[in-house]
Image (cartoon, rainbow over all chains, first blue to last red; front, side, top):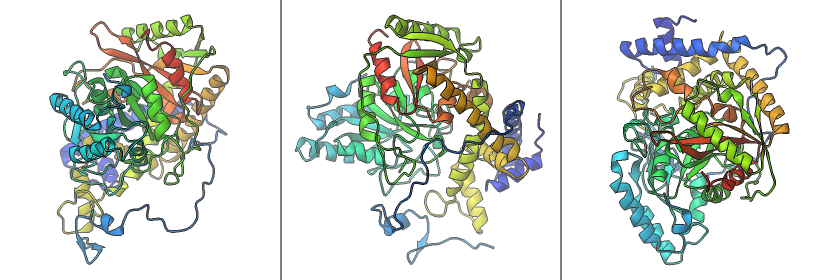
Length: 96
Length: 456
């Protein structure tokens, strides 16, 4: 079994852009530890020389013409979805 | 349940009004999150005036609420998208509308389709169609219950690891998870891109085949779609069928095994050759799935940051906007999966988990391919148990994940798999059987199931 520490869990939360309360972090620590313990069973299998599978389409290099396609959606309709806009721009709080 | 043929050639307005009335009468099941009544009635009137025609003219349906649709919200059953009104429609919806079908509402799901019971919906669970103490299954639980209750003759769902098949089995309807790439994913909320599929839930195999023939096909808006191949078919010749023995062990509910064996016996009586076969890597499929899928989820759900759409949390700094928006917008299960994904992809662990999982995935696919050179169709139960009690598994993620153990293998391999009603347990809960086929043999699976549909 792995042992994920409280700090490990908070580190993963930061990597995932999640803010967790201490209660949530404690609960997820147990869950994640169990799940990681479960998925570790794949160690039992010898995969020397086996190629990984990343996709199952049997398609290769599907190209399209390099032209702009709006998919019939106006930029204004997309902008209208943003919580805060100003002068046709999406507005965000300070970065730093 | 109702059949598509009952709705064709009659007043579309009456069809839609009746479906909406039935939806209201069954509100206690919480199968639907919203109704798109205004748009539905406008389209119904256009059908009745002869302005819209097609194979499904005036036939009402519902879509899982992770399909973008016009005329209402698309929430993915999450707080994040609670008020999200899409500016476009999913290709599958557009294709159904082009044939005159009318979307009357949006079905409940586990938030972002993460779950196997619809209990992870931010708006409360869907109740099982025949026992309100039990789960609907998931994540397409609302779609399955809406069909089982006869609100609509068919519903759209998504299946990444069993999310159409398992609720179909629990509620006694037909569920189709097609070959990966059969139906365009454009306009559908992404979960795990290498196994996400779009499919249908219906009351019978003929209706499922009809809807599949309409929604499938190449779409330039989804580069992973396959060239058109789905054509409904009839089956006259005998097939060679393998029953996967690793899916019939003592861990599986005895009633589920009994019903599966009875179904297999009916296939044998119909003249097909049935043999017991081994898929030795079946027991590893769930571990592969819970590495690969969270990895893809952690990437796909990165887009929910509160900046461009969805709910933005109040904060003074950009990074806090991300963190708080995601904290408030996601359910615990969403966070769990995102963090597992971050873990298996993080430096130092990538080779041990993600790469190893993708290699074992290759071994699993090879084993499937070897079996499918000898056998036309493989059979397993859909789930190890019938529908479980609400709340029974919510505190134990692994126990919840084990509900997917029979359905994830076909997802990882991109193979078509359908869930068909096979019988009931002593309490009267429906039990489904899963038929898995070769790539592009989707229609054949439905044709085989149809041969013994009336007997079941």
